[in-house]
Image 1 (spheres, helix red, strand yellow):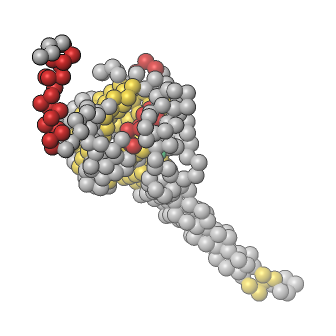
Image 2 (cartoon, rainbow, N blue to C red):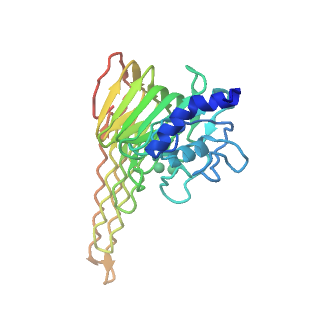
Length: 344
Ligand SMILES: [Ca+2]
Ligand SMILES: [Ca+2]
């Protein structure tokens, strides 16, 4: 009987191979994947269904996410950002309205609950890697119900939301927009992010703004743990549009109402927020101003001196919007878990 090491190795594996053959399966492979980013540039994957590499052969934050979004398996995967590689600034502006495939603007996490979780973390525990949205769009958009996303040791800044994820006008989630599932911020700071509602056009109301730092909706859970921080974020309602000028002899149009602003730091449109040893402070919500009333129409003269049609009255000014947490500068540090709220 042969006794070479190679043959012995085969003999050791043989029962497993036979077992899988008998069951009709191929032998399983470890599929969980870690993609370590090696460029701070904001590039896209050339073939995201098979590789995280961009056109220069590098792995960027965006190209890595495109690749993991396309990996529809049940294993948990992660993206590792070297903290010393510089700021990861997003530079791919949306070409026209919201985009939800992670190719432009915000970084869309599109996995559903049927597949494994995604973790995006710094390579150095305790040291935050910096992601700057460049005020082009919000930074992260967690889109599918049930998906699990963990962000760890990150500073997320410079996000700007002007849409609700699908439609422009009403702004939600300047730093992060999250739909259902589980989102955990583990030693993550969300700072200097803005949700900004659009200004109204002629006589129309301004857009609303909700969640300057974070907006969560659906039925999931958001966990802030381990010295996470929502700070210096703003929700800014859009101004109402000015009323139309009146036709001769007619009143001017009313101005549009100012847009509502809610939740400078965060807004819960649904689900639960749990804050543990983390802080929400120095955020603000400012509603839009009401639009000015339109000018009254001029009088009409048919004779040499007396107007036969009097001048119209000026239009009514629009109502100012309402703010939730306006000028909110409170310090909130919850050392114990399970603090829930609609607005903060
Ligand atoms: Ca998006
Ligand atoms: Ca996007």
